[in-house]
Length: 244
Image (tube, rainbow, N blue to C red; front, side, top):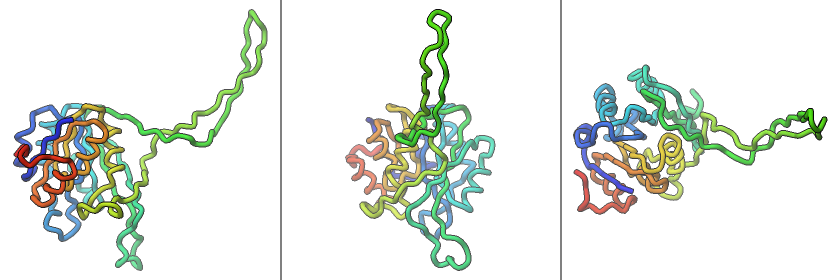
């Protein structure tokens, strides 16, 4: 599947993306909650303007966040906000303030869209059957037949709280790296094979790897040169083929 990577500020790269071409935006944008040089909140109004131009009318915008930035993000486009996922983490943070407030063990994933997007519920299976129903089958021709038993399905629709362990124990590429399994889960939920996925703050390229594994096309943008190089290596992307 095709991959296009841009090593520059997302607002410089957006004009290079064809209008109405993107099927899904999935990005872990800066929260502005740390002192890290890369953790500066984007101009959200300009961000939405550019995303609306490059995305198809029914594209979903799936954006990671954490409070207090979550409130800012949702209110930046309340009209298009639709739902929220909670990523339950394996490891909590905030131990320095453990005597003042609870440990933080989750992040938010906000979902925006203008028109109903692709939605492929990722069912879980092999649950215990919850109910069974009996009904008698009667026929004017053959009289009363043997009762039938109908069983509840063992598959379940997904809930909005999902647990995913961190990947950092096996491979640490970025300070705010998200689990590959989680990103792939979101991409498979809100897009179909062959669709074009955009991550305009791609970091170490986890969304790109997820697209490769799930047969999606990918556009990735990252302004930090050293982190961009990590993404290229993870995606087996030739530097001579840079889109920027």
